[in-house]
Amino acid sequence: MEPIKPQEPALNNYSNKSIQFYKKDNRYILIFADVFFSSSKEDFIIADLYKDLQEADKKCEIHIFIDSPGGDCSTLEMMASEIRKFAQVITICRGHAMSAGFLLWLIGDERYVTPGAALMFHEATHLGWLDIKTKEVKNWNEFSLKLNKQLLKEFQVEDFLTADELKLGETSEVWFTGQDMIDRKLALPYDRYNHRLTFGVVKDTDGNLWESDEQGIFTLYKKSKTSKTLAELNGF
Image 1 (cartoon, helix red, strand yellow):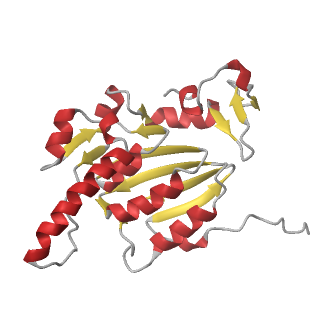
Image 2 (cartoon, rainbow, N blue to C red):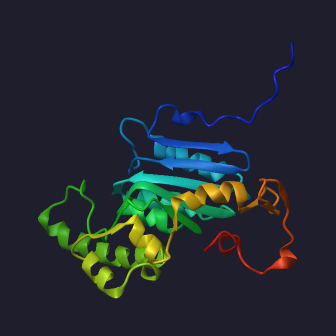
C-alpha cells in the first residue's frame, strides 16, 4: 500500500456554504454567492473568510466568482483590504453583481463577465438594518455622503461610470448587462477566462511569470520581452 501523501491543509469552514474559499494549484478561488454582512445567515463565515484571506499566500493570484446582491460596505471594505494584497486579482461575474457586489467586481486587475450577467451600481446612502431615531437620521445621512465619496475614490468608480451615471446613482440604481461592460472594454467575455487558464500568462508563488503554447505547455516567461503588466498580457 502506498503511503498517504501529505496534502495542503484544507479550508474547511465553507462546506455546503454559499461562500467557498480554497486553493487550486498556485491560485486561490473565492466563490462569493452571498450578501456582505458580518454574520452571513446563521454562521459567522465572513469572519472565517477574512481570517483565511489574511493568512493566504499573497504571492498567488486570487480568482473571485461573484453572484451577490450586495450588502454592508464596511464588510466589503474589510475583505477588499486583504484581496488587494494578492499578486493578481481576477474577478468573474456570471450571474449578478449588485451594489457592494459590483464594487468587489471592479477591483479586479482582470474582469470577466458573461454577456447576460446583471450588474448594478448605486451609492450606499444608508444601512437598511440601522434602527435610529429621527434626530439621528440627519447626522447619519451627512456621514453617509462623506463615506460614499471615499468609497467612490477607493474603488475608482469614476474610471468605470460616466458623470451622468454617477449622478443617477446618487438617488437611483444604474444597471448594466455584462455585454455593456464588454462593449465599454471594461471586461472581457467569460470564454476568454477559460482561454486564459490554458493559454494565458500566469504567476507562480515566487513571482515568476509563465506562458503556454498552443499545446498548453508552460515555459518561463522572460520579463525582458515586454514591460506590460500581467493584466495587459492577458488582454487588458
